[in-house]
Image 1 (cartoon, rainbow, N blue to C red):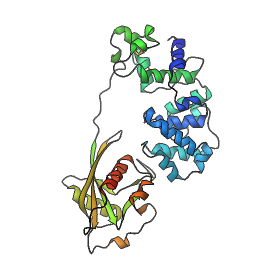
Image 2: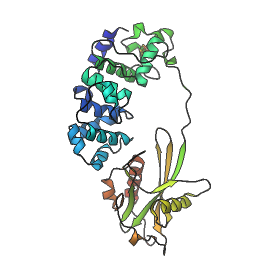
Image 3: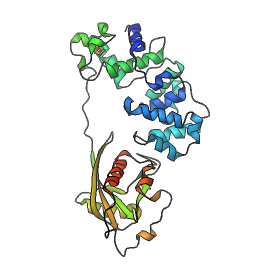
Length: 343
Ligand code: SF4
């Protein structure tokens, strides 16, 4: 490939993204982790706020987990924030090489290569879907990763990514604007979209979940998810997956009893929130709940404790919540508390 053309195109026309104005490894690390599963336009304001709030790896290490999750709220894939925080606390100094970066919690081969090449100029390739597509089309065959040419490996890697994002797009690549078009075999074939060769798509499982808003006075109950696993450390309304043959009301009674010990019945319906994760999609069918009279765990015995809170809508707004639960909270704020006497 004529590397000069690609680099010249990149230097002239690259988007002015905030993390491209720095060679600071910590800032690049943060940007790469945020960009792992999130679009550039979404990441920009989060990146700016994060670096204001935690300008150095030390500042991040000193911050409480709740502040870290709050700064990440809405970006999704919260293990990324927990891993950044954990790594910041463990690292005595930031790594330099891609191999050293790979040993850091939450940093895979792609992120390690991006940080090492951009911040330290190491000749190591990044190889994501964009880069694979560009190189496979250029060669008109499926390619595996290869080290960048000598020179500026960070710029080279970013130029390939940028080309894949803006020009050599999955559908309708803009070959007429492409700096490497004269040597591109896929373009010459007249069918640039044929590469990379497609893999069969897997079906995404779907979960139906019942969620309860349990009231006690003007407050409702939220609980914290375990640190490990999906959405770990975030606050949510209680509930769980509907089993075969159950109504949502039956599911809610069972799940809330199992999770909290509370004896409640499902009251008025509040909202259904749909959300898609990478490996499954979910529908959260949310109901206001009321206490069953005369049962052991009545409201007065349901005290707050570690990982369990009774909060007002405003207090809930200050907690870090998964996006789907945040949307339940929005619906709750709009609807208000349902009328007595049920509660
Ligand atoms: S010429 Fe077209 S297919 Fe080839 S790399 Fe450029 S945009 Fe992609």
